[in-house]
Structures are given as C-alpha cells and as structure tokens.
Image 1 (cartoon, helix red, strand yellow):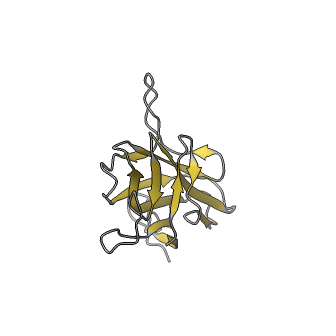
Image 2 (cartoon, one colour):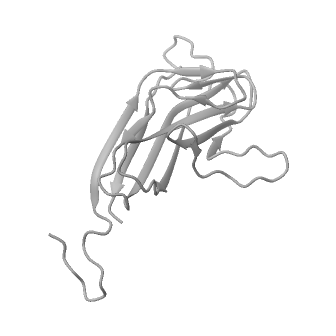
Image 3 (cartoon, one colour):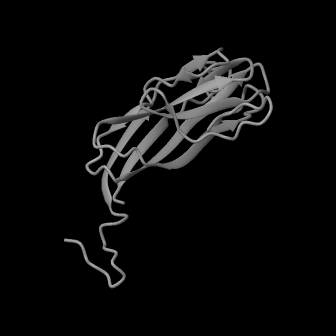
Length: 166
C-alpha cells in the first residue's frame, strides 16, 4: 500500500518492481571495426508498468586488443535497432556509449556503465551491447592473446536490468 505525502507524491515512486540479470561466462572475439553483438550478454525484461524506468547496469569482463594499443568502442541497444545514449557527433570521432583503450595485449580491464531508460511499454524489451575496434583483435572475458597460461585471466560479464516505478 502506497503512502500518500502532503506534496501529492507517494511511496510508489522509485520502488523496485523487478530485477533481471544475465551472466556471460563465455568469450567473444572480433576483428571487425563495425558493431558486433556480444552474444550471451543480451537481457530481456517485460515491464509491469508502461511508465517505469529501466536501470541498465553493464559490466564487461577483461577486454583486450591483440597486438595493438587501440580503442574498443561499446554501444548499448534497446531491442534490435534503438541505439541508446551515445556521444555527440563531431568531425570524424567515433560515436559510442562507452569505450576503453586497454593498452598492450596482456592487459585485462573491467568496463562498466549505467543508464536509466524509459521504454514506455509493457511488452518484452531486450537490451544488448555491441562492440567494435579501432584495430587488432578484440576479446571479451579474455585478455588480448588468451594464451593457456596462469597469468592470462578469463572473467565474466553481466547485465542487470532493474524496473523502477516512476
């Protein structure tokens, strides 16, 4: 039962309605400079209220670019085509949601981002992350070379969707 406050607001606003999580333990790699979906990291939620907001929390495990010191670009998508927040277009700069420049191929870095979306629906809504590279071979959940050695880590990636009452 909601508590009504004197200013007209109530205790329903901001309450958590549901939480959905996906954990991706596999590895992905790509040599493409165009967006590649991180298979296994896509997550769906069916909002219970059309006015709800969806908090999207993404953590991508060790990312490496084999043989280079180049950037990896990440873009967040709703369903198959709605590219959520991205940097502004200016000249020939890469437009993406977030990025990392991992350095040399032995490095492994966690990358994370948070975003509040307003899908305005009660239909199933999916979210996924695509990645592209500046050069070399990109890896998700493994470092750049992914050798079978004790100092070459394998990690996980997660996506958590939280429906929040508006």
